Length: 375
Image 1: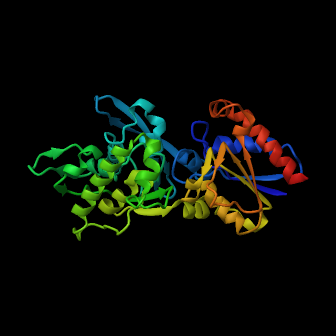
Image 2: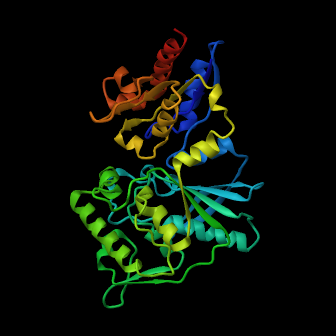
């Protein structure tokens, strides 16, 4: 029996590469099971780990000064053969990078992403790096700034009614009266792998759907949404910019901002998973698939990795096993009849305990999955 192991990351526990390894350890003990391991990334947490798993790359450091003038190191991966570099937004401005008490989206922005892009451009111009494209995995960010912070490091400035320059944080977006943009010359293209298809300023949009988990209050969300709408209205008439009718909500609008100001290509996670992660696999030879993620809910169907795998294999009528930290689906969403759900939280007294002991939880869940497959 050929079993594809393709989980997404379990936030607060481990990335998809580690989760895949734990599942494979148990399954591979059975001689009747042949495993094909393909950890998932939808652009969010663990993106670089997955890239290492599917592409021959080496790591380089980018040095950036923070607000207190301290130098911080950030990593990008380089595929020398294909002249592509990879950057993960979640490892730079992700929730995991910011203490809970400092998760205040009104005051946070994506400027470090812009600074890394700028430093990469300098390295290319100085012949220290040779790339044609920088691919950014976008998801899991603590920011909701429409990518304005990133663009502020690449030639964009905001001004109020009196011509005063404003700090590029969402708290100031409603005060913006004009925008000056002197585009930095990037010697490479930008591509963004996005983990959601949700519209940024829909009713409700990604701002409301994902904002609370980033630490925003109801009043914060109203200010952020009004501010982003204000900036959108200012730039919309500019025919020199690539302004779409609908803004992708991944990374708090980071992909959309880079798309508008730098013509970044937005690539859906579904296409990335099918064309890159699974491209070497003959799906007709797969008998069953094990996928899942930390919290499987309605958001998992908005372009997230486990939801993509579920959809792909439900159509093929394969056996599907979902190993999740927890599953919380509304009554109007039904899983396919060929799907078995196993929740780690069922083995423990609390969510905190299941997170702390996730390795033993994965082992127990995988044993149940194995028994189901070989019955």
